[in-house]
Image (cartoon, rainbow, N blue to C red; front, side, top):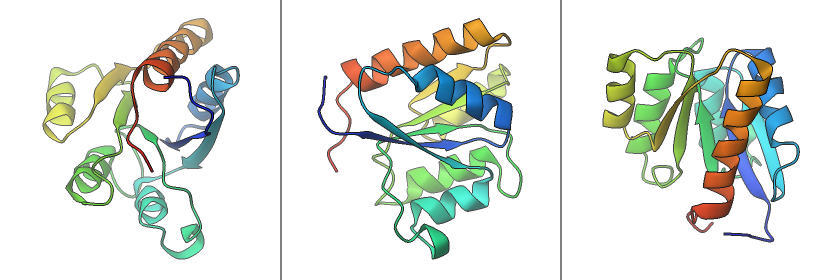
Length: 145
């Protein structure tokens, strides 16, 4: 699905190192990507609902969500996103360190569109990000704005 419009990505991640790795992996994306970052679950929901300082925030085409977040857990964010009529159409990719079966099952039960365990090394992390990018930005047709 090559597209001429910019893909808006909201990364909900509290680890600055993982934010940098994700951005690095998307740096050479085949499409134009704008990445916004929310460092905790409360900010993420304010961003998505365009509240306060986020009143002019773009609606993301895709959300990368860590499960272990301060203030509001990623599972709560996922549940809230998928229960909001104006947000539930946005694909959510859980990208987390947990490979626990209960986290995987719960994430899919709550409406996650995919679940990816973060790799440890830089090379593997970038490879995973590139694979996500190839699939979600070039193969999948994202919902229209």
